[in-house]
Length: 236
Length: 349
Image 1 (cartoon, rainbow over the protein chains, first blue to last red):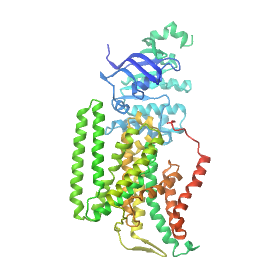
Image 2 (cartoon, each protein chain N blue to C red):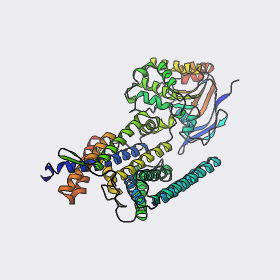
Image 3 (cartoon, rainbow over the protein chains, first blue to last red):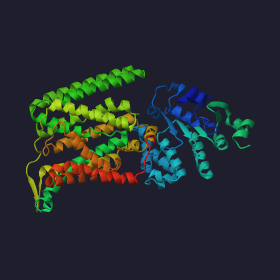
Image 4 (tube, chains in turn yellow, brown):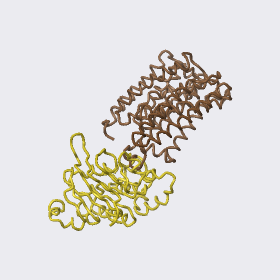
């Protein structure tokens, strides 16, 4: 039994009067890849933003055994949680190299140049384009840059929000392969995807969100064969 | 036209460049503050006034009122910080903050009180002036703007107008209604063929250029500089790599106040500054910043230098219309921008 890096208990998040998350609970064991799947509007991005502290929420968030309540976003980053948002939120008018360098901002004095080389090794395209402005990259390259920027912060928990959105199938495969590599290097990943089949294939466990509630959960292998899920998310 | 007379033209051009260099500094500060914090910082010119008049007061061997403003703001800021820390269950850190602020306050008071009557050498007084005016930036940010961090640009603008009025009033109380000039750093002139340039003007131009180069290197080469650019480009992206908008705002306002104070020290010998000069001086920087669309640093600086030059030529040939001409300059620019710029809704971040 591994210990949980992140525990979410009875999480509620509202936009004004609309409740986007109604009592979501989930566990992210250290060293695992956990997938959250669901249709558009199921509350997947809301869940990520609530864990990160971008949106205010009620309920409990326990990270490394400590509650996250009242801790601002920037401090969560410094404690090793990194979000790659759906919109990527890169620094479009700055160079690829600057984007990556800034990823190490929360680490202050620590050595990060070695990690920069490591990111360039992982994403050789970024090395070729290191002087180019981030806004001029293709969608796939921007996604690589967003992941690379997050990795520069040496996260222990990586939150990936729809990394495959709008990307060609080949690039999606590349990105999921890299997620699997990250797990081997000790990073715990919470992965939100619409592409349920591909994400369950690399995950240890999964949760299915529907209108702000967990409908199904279990080991990824079992979920992938669940007839209910197969019908609605895995295309029959 | 008279102004193209070969004996007058170089003098006017030199004058315009000197003032333009200072306006350029202010324009850069305005663009920086707006880009990072979305604040249209009307009181930028007040930092110039406080710079000149603090130095002038020190010249007279008196303690400048700036000291009391710094101490009062330090007290308020420390209490606000301690209160918000205590509310997050960090009461101890709050107490430490108040303690550190008290020590800083006593230290600032002791140094100023000791140095002011000594009539120390000019460069010591300049450093003391910068040391007193620059902290106004982060302190005002903490007290006025940080609580409004998520407010709209309009609310932030209203706060800026209010702050401008308060600071002008305080300047009247601290420094009196009379204008002051400070002594030149260098006497004498430099003659290059037809052109005569005072060493003082040359100092202003060189110091401004050096400061701009310094800012460029800061933004291009250092992590805190890149962090400010990142905050300006994408606020959420910046937060996601751990840059707090408050600390970015604090650093920005420190730079703005330092630039303003330095501007005040530089123009002190050539312009008679009164307690209410800040608005017009700031506005000229603002015209430059608008020419740069509040986003482009080189355009803003170039625009501000143009403002300085036009002002100088206008004050010679049409002195009654000087300000009218300078501020009319903004109309074609605004018209052109309104025709060429895509409107971005305010809530789009």
